[in-house]
Length: 108
Figure 1 (cartoon, rainbow, N blue to C red):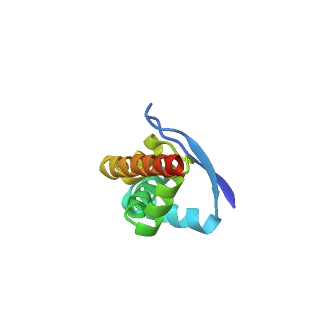
Figure 2 (cartoon, rainbow, N blue to C red):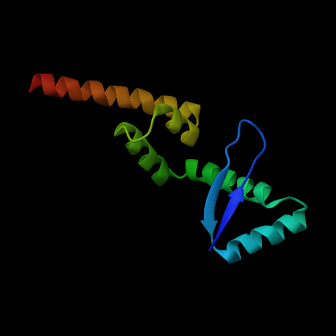
């Protein structure tokens, strides 16, 4: 494994460092050569596509919602993962669940 840096010069982007298998980075570099791009472009595109696909996976969306309901992630993180509309729907549902719980406890 090698440490590889992904550096992006724009002020709205963050520099990250991670370890990846040599073979994966070699394949990334080969694809970058074919496309006339650099490694960072390939990695950012792959990550963006993975996150976009993951946001449409029902099982993962349920895990994300559960993390939000349990307070493990913020509303802003939720919105970044599932989009503004779905996040708003999940926030309303969380509020309804919280109100129902309070009503149940009050009635007990």
